[in-house]
Image (cartoon, rainbow over all chains, first blue to last red; front, side):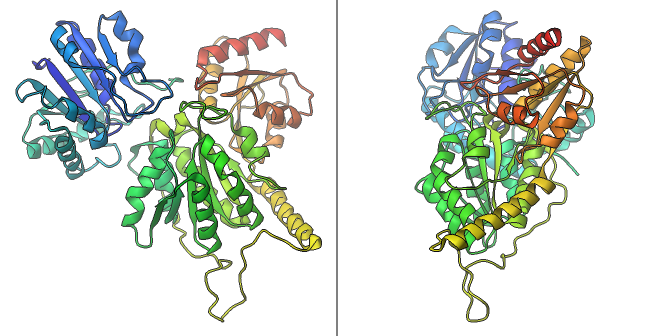
Length: 207
Length: 350
């Protein structure tokens, strides 16, 4: 696997698969060292990193989430400090909320995250509404960078259609992901299901 | 047709726009915010598009009254507490025979309850959506694709029978993502002939009203409306179900997806279980339920509530079969294993 820096910020459009990728990265990096995962999603009340509390506890991964996560209090509250997590773990994964609305919360940590100390992944899904064209995905990336004050360091291609994902669909998305990476001036780090196996952790209750 | 990955809320909004709805009035509430947010971004880009975030749900539903009254296709959406606020306006819309689509992405209650999913507004939607003698057709999608298909259908029913129509979904359907396709949706943005939008001396006046000074006139008007309701029952009632099951499990919306998995588990253990899923809650598919339970020994109803649809099930069956219930509340979605255990219990008992 890629040599990540100690802080990995995972951004992207709503539903691009940030949470599933963050959880998979946490499980993989836990084989190399101590891992903390931060649920910084202040936008979404459903389907979030804090859902995997037990799985993370099982693998000694420290979950840091707002005490209001998965409660009925839908206020955009950050009730924790990630600096402690960064000091005490080899890797800290920060799962950010969708779009620039979600990435706004990152702004609070911009002074704490000087360039060169973090990787910021931008997750793209060619099948997801509003990011189906490279231009759309790039426009959103620029908005995320603007509000967070952080710079993207790599693209993650997570093109999928949930249970209807096919090998052809993933293969056909490569030119799309490569174009985004090229225009953003950063590498295409990996394509899920192709050169990065992912376990589907974010599931519907009947699946 | 290429499929696209969408949240149920987004899919509902996009389907409405594609079917010719250019006017939306609403007020934010979780877990339906994506509908309002989507409309706020999309409608201003459309020629003649109108998006208004009203000062409250009460304001929004009365803007719908005004818009529909002028003959223009329109919609509103909310979640449980917001629908309660809209109740007065819905009664007025029904009283004035105005078509519109109202989406309820249900959350737990009563009161502010929780932002997590629920199905506790079944009684409200099907029995008491507003004061007065009225019904509103209520559609119950169980997938993101059906959030598209039923939104299109809702506008068709609303305009054909001149009635408000409700889409009764839940937080899970609104928030979850699935692949959808939009196919060929007919864009129907024409202005209705009965709109009170200025006759210009060229035609008879159109009057939008629900107040009647003469009892005879009001009675005639209500009777005529109920004749239309009879036609809705005949033509629009819809359900899907397995035939010849011993244990029939009735559920709608998200819960029907869980039930499907539970029924598959039961069949794997040799229990002849089947799913009965109403796609319309009013009218409730009585004939279809009788057909589905022709050889059944018992019926299990599963809902994210303390049991509301169960009453319609018992009445449709004329209390001839044992009917039991399994539900979760507080924002919990029952899991397939819980329902499977209950099916197994019924299988042993009956």
